Image (cartoon, rainbow, N blue to C red):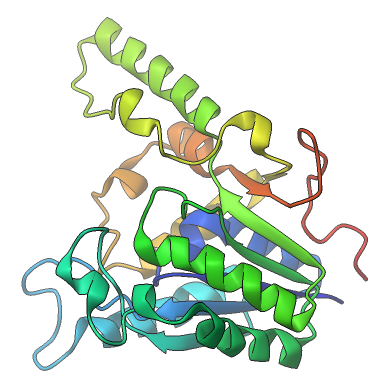
Length: 267
């Protein structure tokens, strides 16, 4: 049995980005640990959703534990930083925000967990945090440094296949035009900073067997992912296209896709 530590910025990121590989590792008999940098204090929540006196972060912590159980994580840890909000907002620079945290300090907090767990595998995000969110970028910086401090041998940068996403967008736009269906789709130009080009990716994991777990974990984050949200409202075939594959970059691997299982060869 090996240990996978999956490091994320906010509650709900884990099920969207790495829910499949987490559940797959669990079903392979490995130990899965979820570490979240913040409690998602600046997430958006519908008016009246929270109970009287309840803070959003309290709800999001409970949601994270519920989702982690679905995904097979046996340990959940929060590093104790505050959600920085979207890039360019005043919350980026507030005291205690993850964005302002010294990388070495935050990396040591994560490295302590990696050492405790003797983790063989760590997931972080790519150097742009997938789409430019400050806390996601910081996950990359902190996670990569923590792996160095702890000597964690395998580090996978979770990302998206930009080229495949553009292909799917094109097909969906063509279908919408043909059927007259209204489709609020981003433009190809808007995707220029989303994920990474296909040629930079080194690992692709088919997680289609765990789509039901990903959906259930997303539903656990009800404060952020409503039943009628874009994610959960997708029909099964579109949901499979969007979430049935998880993409990663592992430095020193490649060129091209060389891995299909993050835990391959680990007892």
